Length: 176
Image 1: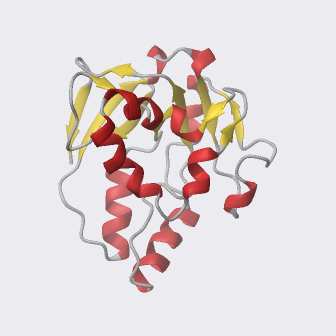
Image 2: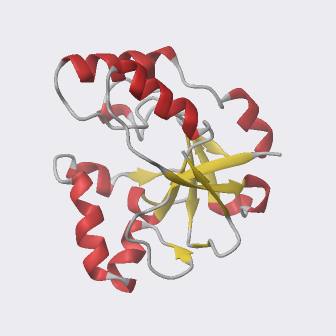
């Protein structure tokens, strides 16, 4: 099986998972709350995703890396990590024309949208090559902990980006 993962929002309403920009019209108060994570990097919200021809916040973000690996690496770096609820999606159910792989090849955020190969059409066959946590990400966690900062949990982790909303009523939830 080819699985991808998404942290389940604590304040989830209904049985659909919405991209941030859609959340703005469906649940405006939740949008305000979730948009806060971009407060110090607002330019990211306006980033244009090639292939899908949409903005960063028009897509759902998934990780091909099992969340237990992310959680373990964060704890190994020194962070205290609480309980996680994670949606486990079968990637084969995504519509390919609405899905793109974001490889996270760039080192500098300014290169994110222009670096050749950073975004490419998605296929489930790619998931087996990108389902582990890189040394780059583990080093980032350790450095962030040493600096006393809060980490972005998926720096350096490839993403599967899906343009649209998804029904979660029958999706498996992992408790980690």
